[in-house]
Length: 356
Ligand code: KG4
Ligand code: ZN
Image (cartoon, rainbow, N blue to C red; front, side):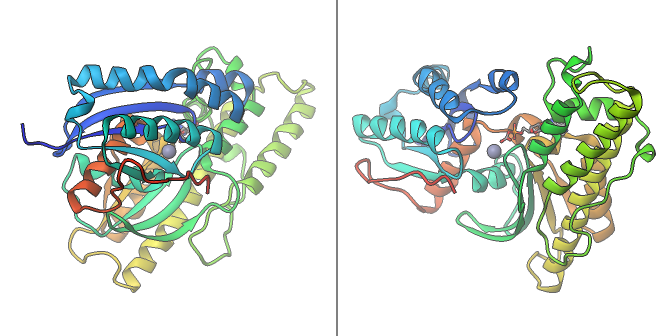
């Protein structure tokens, strides 16, 4: 066929992902190797471990994606690979592999910005026109931006310290939720969402971060300190050691989830008002796209839908599988760039990864 085919490769964090897409966004083949289980055991990502796992799996993951697609390297129009931002050691493996691959097969190379790829994934499924507002919330990111074009983003705010998923993971760990029979295989965020369903959020009250700061930035480190202090107080009251499940764990989970949701919703509300004041979004059917691992939280989605209802925006969330890191979103960004002829490099171009 005359369709242009793009191989996308993602290694910026703890997922080794590859996918082959045609230029209308049909996924012809994909493969993903997640390191999450390994990192769950060590209580966080150790960069050298992540690097070694990417090294161990990248060849196979790319071969699997190609094999499943039935596409040979010679049939590809380009290779798109995440080069920023992310963990330096992880990015390096994907870039090194990709550069070897494009040189070997004489293919154009498209360097991809991981956040921009997250932001545009929704367009693979629905014809959302630019500009639109995006909220990205995951274990590694927290940002609000206006997507104005394939390579044109206006950053309205980002986290000043840690990302919400990271906070939820650390709180879940501090609460030893992994010892809860229903939570042993869940991510921290999923464990908190599950426990929160049976919790009474009003039994605890945490201060929403940056309440008096009039911008669209996020902060979660101070909130985590508040939460940790409360957990220590409860452990003392219940006379238990750190590492034992508190009887009030679900109430704490509910309050934590509520405060994170409130913070995200309030900052997003500010961003929407700012966009309206400055005519940054189209007057007819303005859209908020919510993506990232934390976006699969139903309570957080509900909080954001209240804000979009209030301000007359439509809220779009890509399916969970596309909200998290994968090769598909990188290949899609490659397709969008190829269509517009933006950021396409010859096979022998010198490209560096950029952690920040
Ligand atoms: O996008 P993702 O898979 O990886 C990156 O961080 O890039 O997001 C994973 C993060 C983890 O911190 C996880 O705890 C959080 O998303 N997460 C959730 C939920 N599912 C995953 N947080 C809140 N509620 C959930 N249901
Ligand atoms: Zn990501």
